[in-house]
Amino acid sequence: MVSQELSDYIKSQQQSGQTIEVIKANLIKSGWQSPDIEAAFQTLTTSQIPPATSQGSVNPQSPPKYILIAVAVVVCLLLVGGGILAYTWYKNTNPPAEQTAPSPTPTPTAPVEKTSNNSLSYSSPQQGYGFNYLKSWAVDKQGTLTVAVDPTSPNSKQCAATLEKLLACNAIISSTPYITPPVTAPGVTISGTPPIKTHTQQTQDLASQLATGSKATPLTIGTLNGYEAFTTTTEGSTYNVLLQGQKNMILIQFPNKKSRTDLSNGQSTILESTTEQ
Image (cartoon, rainbow, N blue to C red; front, side):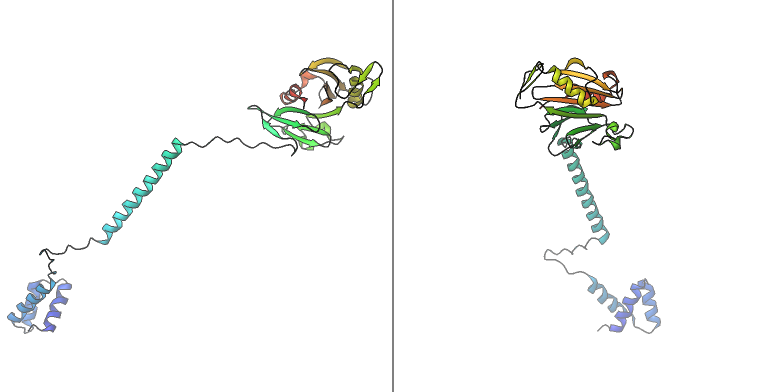
């Protein structure tokens, strides 16, 4: 029977890297017999042979861990790459709908809607008028007035519906409904929904009162947007245009302007698009 001590010694020497010849030489020097040494080596060799499978073949060793890790990494990279390619293809074949930047709404009761690439539409059913204005401008409802301002103009932040701050606005719009029930003035009969061009004197008087506070300045009569229009300049500092409609008289005022030729692009947009609602 092979000595366990001898077997353990041989195993330890093999694990330390000693060759069989050196191990045998050392054992003989230590007094071990050659047959015992050979028997121990034979026993160790037999015990290290893996058991045969049912087909008589030896079970293959499991692959090293680093190979499994490498395979897992490759699989993950393939999955991520495939996902990116799939997402890119989907985005290219299904482009998102173009969104328009939101525009400021002047008031809850005066909805704004896009009318062109450069302008928006303002509507005030309560006051009976509407107009277009540049998208870069701001419009606000101030009591019975509507004010419009170019944010890039000097003192634009001071624009408000108070007498000392109105001059900082770029446009001021207001309206006055016709008097009801019918009223008779010298040479003029006024009704609730009169036909156009029947209230010249009454309109002139009203425009003078609103624009200058008196009846001193005669107005230039013309047409604008299909309406009879009257214009004047208040003490050389405010250009006023009054439109006579079917139900209302709409007054548009441009502070610090003397005539229509002085108006900016944004002011002209408002003037040329104002209509009754």
